[in-house]
Length: 332
Image 1 (cartoon, one colour):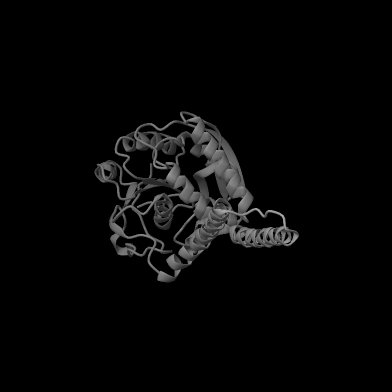
Image 2 (cartoon, one colour):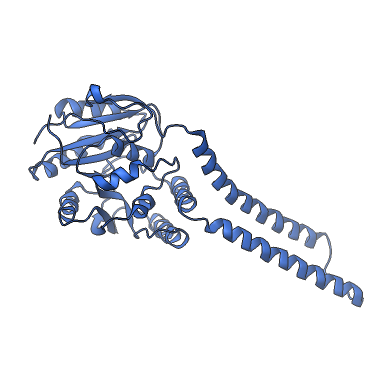
């Protein structure tokens, strides 16, 4: 069993069509480096044959290790589980859909060898994506940048290389509603970006529709900024001032004997405006309360149904937090 220098962490959800090609291209890239490596595949509760394909890859190559979730926990948790189990000196997180090309990994490693501890991929171009997807992606990054307290690089996703020292810090951060891009920026260290061309999916459907993008944006904003709460308070004072002003105007018109702006239509409009605003503010507060509730319950981030390719003597518990798990690997 050889200690790998590089760990490739790849979450997968219903990716049976892509995994064989993903492994082939990744193996070709990593073997050319001439240094020991491992692949940590995380099955995020797939409903197709993804687990069977993973086991076939492990049978062919013992450097492929598998973390099989008991159910679907989401992309960010799956990446976290992979980092929890990986044992390389440098760890690359990459999706298995081949939109982020494995051929860029040597460039990430080259910058790591120059002394950078976080090397993130920057999407210079995006192939095969609609104008709506491109628009919402740009809006997502700019909204996160405007509202959060950390400097999150534009067009940088979860395709990145992390030094083991950085991963050790991330393992200490066990919040449930995770936004790894923000967490990686928050920990600091020497960071640099590498531009690349993002490809269209090799096969299958996107695992990040608009609904999940909105959820990720909310997790990023509420996890790194209290600005929405401050905006809610400020807007409350503004509405209170406007209400008092309108009340004084109507009172003045009544005293002056003029016809005041009144009627059921006005009353209903004002009531809907105020009620809608209050519900929005309650929703914002609810997002923060939900984060607190998730943390105080103290539940594990994920549960593991099965580990394949890991040393049984050092097998992690299902709560898997910051343990240093071992994984079988062979030198290329």
